[in-house]
Length: 288
Image 1 (cartoon, rainbow, N blue to C red):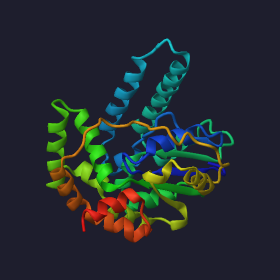
Image 2 (cartoon, rainbow, N blue to C red; image 1 turned 30 degrees about the vertical axis):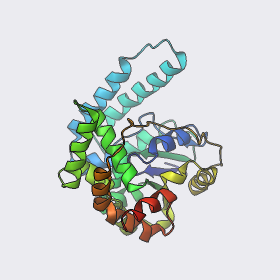
Image 3 (cartoon, rainbow, N blue to C red; image 1 turned 90 degrees about the horizontal axis):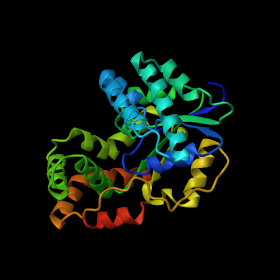
Image 4 (tube, one colour; image 1 turned 90 degrees about the vertical axis):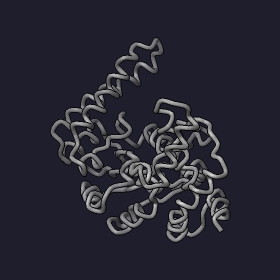
């Protein structure tokens, strides 16, 4: 794949990965696929490529069904996405690491960075992370973390909004399942401690950027990410809010139960990072 750096955005979900994807995709020295979340390595762990093919076909059909929109710019974007889904479906129909890398580098030209930003990669095993690190001469990993309570509630609101029923009741029931250990997907994505342990065991720390959602949109952080990736610093739309969830405030009881459940995550990140953003420390004080 030449001299390009292979970037993996490994999460966390609801912690700014879509904003990061859009910023990097617009950078002239970066080539990212029009399909943001490829889900290659998490699907490889389960072997359920048939289910992933069905999901990707649905996403492709959703975009095809919108064409034409009457908006020339939007139509161009949708056509690019449909084209990318077609190519990606060919890859996962007969998956291999070589085909995956070829997909990422196709038409990359002299791009300095190519990559895949899939938040579900935060749940990957050490074996998978090691495998990813070996795919190119130079690999980089970005893991963004958001205040555990805010991230959990945003994830729950998103999941609840996709289901039938009143949002508050559905979100409350989901929170109850998570705290009771009955929702493994949201639980896994909330487990910063496990992700950090696996990243530390599998990867060279010089290849890993650990950041916070709360400071992601600051020019200093954007400059650090560009430096980490070896690309020219570029101004970003740091005020843009991407994929904001439904507004819904937790009750005090919900907040207290969720914070108690999340206490190990606050401790793990504080141990790994030292100083934490103010939002984190405010919530940690409620645990004292």
